Length: 325
Image (tube, rainbow, N blue to C red; front, side, top):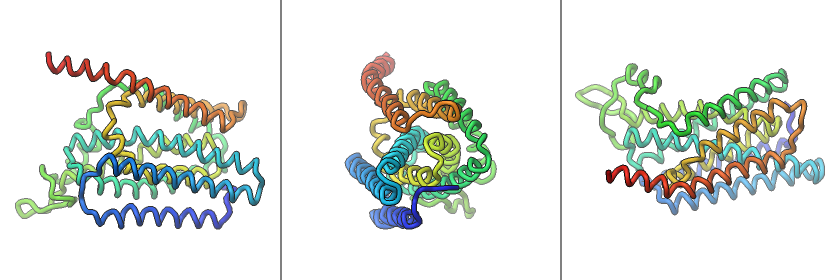
């Protein structure tokens, strides 16, 4: 698993992530359970994005010192493209979180803790999967074609299911969890287990945690192959992925407030996955420059978001007319 990053940058990255988690999970946790406001979500989203860009600047400087400006520019663009792809795919992840929280009627004050635990799990899971994926690709080049085909099929499936309402009640994982353990009907603060009629049972919040963890696994399988189409350097794959995840909690509360306005975003993400998968399938025939990949992803997402904003008022008006009727 060859990487261009020097050892000191690996160490700096680990320390930076640990420091970020300390601030986000320890210092902010002292606030206790509370509903995160849109203003707070916007401020923290900006902080996480700026930190990601600052790290990319440091990465550029480290590569520049050892290999010159041209390679430094290429590698920093790979980080930026990978970060944007992972951040974009995280949006679909967030919509699933929103569906889970809505289904279980999780109070906004308790959602923060669930997301905190989910982020820690996602970081550990993705680190293991990225290192394993990098090793597989370094040993078996044909794995790239499997990743590419998987992404194309996933994109087609996402497009097909974009306008369909998911049915969480029929989810097999949820049915299995309810069979394995008794679950209460009411929350007990932020507790995962409580005592009812003298017996220890799980609270609905524990089911939510389990479903969020399952969602992390599913989306990691979808998103990690996508970034290997941009770069095979495990350092860039890992760092861009983790920095995209670190801001997930703030981005959730931000997008939860405007979710209905970006109703077409799933279609855009589906096209992105098909494009990235195709890029991976033709990697040995056509070399698509990183800058071109970045431009295509940005263009797809921009068109989707603008079109969503233009059509959202008409959809809301039709829903209002249907409710009135």
